[in-house]
Image (cartoon, rainbow, N blue to C red; front, side):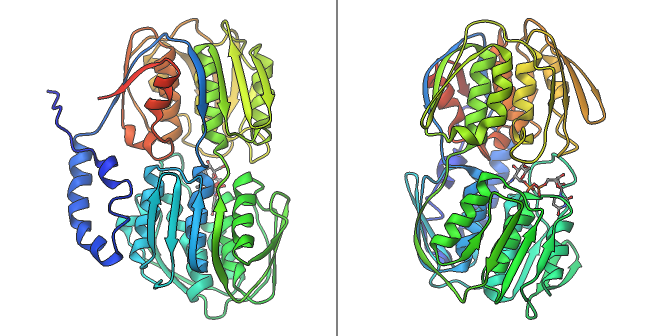
Length: 458
Ligand code: UD1
C-alpha cells in the first residue's frame, strides 16, 4: 500500500534544528530519533522512466569529502568561521549535529554555513551519532589537538568494506597518545602528545586528514610520509592555514606541520565535488546527450577524463566547465582499476560500471580500495547487465540495453550508479534505500530532471 502523506525528514532536518541554540537542540533529539525511525519505515524511493537523453547544464556543489573533515577542523578554531560553497546533504547535517553536542552553533543560509566555536566544550561522541556518519572519526584528531583528550564511538558509514581505523590509531600512538578501546568506544589521552615523524603503510585519506589536524596544535614539527594526495587534503590544508595553521606539502607524498598555539576564525570557500562532477559526466556518457558540467576543477577528474576519451564521446574543457557529448553507444574501456588519487577513484567505480555495462565490448574492472564495492552487480543483473565477478575483479560484457526493475541502493555510490542505470533503461525503475544517495548528492532528482530525465521521488 502506498501512503502519500509522508513527513519530509530532509526538509525538517535541513538547517532548522541545527540553527537552534545547542541546549534547545538537545530537547529535539528524542523527537528526531522518532522521526528517523518513522522516515526509515516510510523510506523514499526514486522512480525513473528511462530512455531519455540528457541535455543542458548542471552546476556542481561543494565537495562532501572536503567539507566533512573541515567541519572537524573547526573544532581547532577559536571564533567565527564562515564556510562558502557548503553542500546541503545528510552527512553534513549529521556532522553539524555532532558539533552542536560540543556547544558549537552552526547556521546555514543557502550554501553558506556560519559556525561559532566560542562556547566549545569537549563531549563524548556517542554511538548514536557516529553510526550516522563515518566522518565522525575526523573528530578524534581535532579533539586531541584542542583538548588533549577524545572519547568517541567507532564510526559507521556506508558498508563498502571492513573500513578499519588502525592506521589512524597507530599514528596517534606514534605521537604519544594513549588509547584504550572498550565497549565500542575509543578513549584517547593526549596529555603527552608530541611532534614526530610518521610513515603511513597505506595512503589513507582519513588518516592523513586526522593526523594533519592532530599535529596542527602540537608543538614542534610533525612530518607525515606516504600520505594521501587527494584534492580534498589540499583543501583541508588551505582551510587550516587560512585559520592560522602552518602546514605545507598537501598534494605530495610528504606533509609537514609546524605546530602553532591556536587557530582563529575566518572565511573559506570549499572546492567543488569532483565525484559529483564525475557522476554527471558518466550519466551523460551512459544516457547520451550533450551536457555542460559547471563549476568544476577539470584537472581533479583527469583520470576519469582520460578513460572517457577512449570511449569515443566528445569532451571539451573550458576553464571551470566540462562539456560532454555522446551521440551513440560508446566503446568499452579495456581495463580499469581503482587506486588512490591521482588514479581512477573508487568513488566513481560503480557509476563507471553502469556505463561499461551498456558499452560495446568487454571491460575488466579491478577494485583495489574497498572489498565490498561490487554490491551493485546483482542489481544491474536484474536490469539485464552481464557482469561476472571474481573476487575483486569484474568482467563487464556490454549489452545493448538495460530494462527497468525494482532495485535497491547498497551504498552511496552504488545508489548513484543505479540512478544512471535507471535513466538509461527501457521502462520504469524504482530505487529504494535512497537515504544512501542523499548522503552525498544534493537534490539529485531535481538536477537530472532539469537535464530532461523523467525522475521523481515517491
Ligand atoms: C575517503 C573518502 C571516501 C573514499 C576513500 C578512498 C571521505 C569522507 N571519504 O574515505 O569517499 O572512497 O577515501 O578514496 O573523504 N584503511 C585501513 N586502515 C585505516 C584506514 C583505512 O585499512 O586505518 C583502508 C580502508 O579499509 C580502505 C583503504 O584503506 O580499504 C582506503 O581507506 P581511506 O583512504 O582511509 O578512506 P576513507 O578516509 O575512509
